[in-house]
Length: 147
Image 1 (cartoon, rainbow, N blue to C red):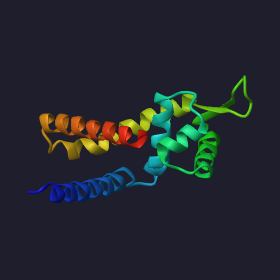
Image 2 (image 1 turned 90 degrees about the vertical axis):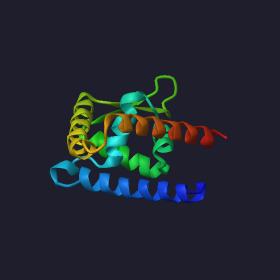
Image 3 (image 1 turned 120 degrees about the horizontal axis):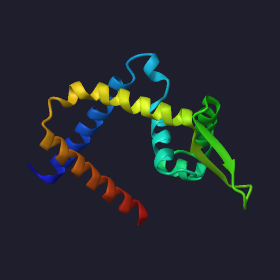
């Protein structure tokens, strides 16, 4: 199979997998408490405390106004805090609250429980290789975005 065909199959498979994962992760009303975007936000802030809204917008590919709306929702839910920088009041830092940390842990556990029955059809070595390949693609994409 030529590289062009493989790339098309890759993108098709990726799109199908993304759609199916979204369907599986949002199957009940209770599980829609946090959207995928909210989960991504909580995960980002857990790994990058004191990030700014503009950093959040960049990493999530959102406009400034969309990031502000998302931030407002998460502040109102009690999952994140806004703090003004002590040296420059124009700068705002975002961080998870303890409720946000609990929500993130809960959502990650729920996601794992939902994926376990699906991933049991993939052997450990294939899953390890898939994770390795996906990490390599992410790194390449990040480097490409920096150029």
